[in-house]
Image (tube, rainbow over all chains, first blue to last red):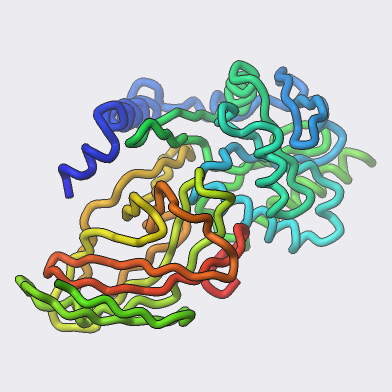
Length: 208
Length: 155
Ligand SMILES: [Cu+2]
């Protein structure tokens, strides 16, 4: 079994995992332990990146301001975390009913090499219709990820394929573009929907 | 060496197999329940399957691997999310199941990762997945393919 792991993932993969563990230690317990505020995403108004949505429209952070927003990073070749999160999000949106139409819901790929606008269009088509898929040049994706204080990393697998490690939290912003809260990957649904309602409520309060 | 039997279309399937060289007894007491998977888009993206593996016997069993005609490289994987919220996936270690215990392969944790698909996974179809155990025994389950947005065995 041990030997198989090494063969399947290759030295590069093992190296990447070791590096990741190192980075994880550095950030969690080591000298890079977070100053809580430093890890918070910027307000959407302070972000700057240019992407394309799955229908070919030019989009950026300013596209999102004016409505409450939910953002999630992933990639369409992701067999586990991304379909699970997108189906969770779809379920939350169903629970919200008509209120879902008052939100922006954006899935940003961290794998623009494979996730073209067409690939994103096909993929998001299987989930709640409110979900938009954004892609674009690698440097712009990287700027977006940085602004959200998220991270991603390409990890090679056997046979020249690769997978992506990435931040799996869902980010919630109010209509002014201020971060309201985040929904962690393993967070139960009972907590998620009230959080989204909070983002929607702050929208109402901000508007009146 | 080992006899494979399938029962088609049953979400709740347990299959026992003959064993040629039982170093440890046990895999004949394995019950696989609630198997499901999500449909794929084509064959370039890997698939994933989920189930509960229950040890109804008196001996500890060890799940060592997977085979399926659907994928060239099926593997038991584990998804982990670190303190920064970053998720990653890696091959799981051997999975030991004590008598009377079960192990859940479910979204966000252990999963049967189906790499290099031979055929697209089409909603409404099923595929056979064989679990191999350290005693040389095998258990084959017929896994239903649900929609891409499915959340569990019943959706
Ligand atoms: Cu996997």
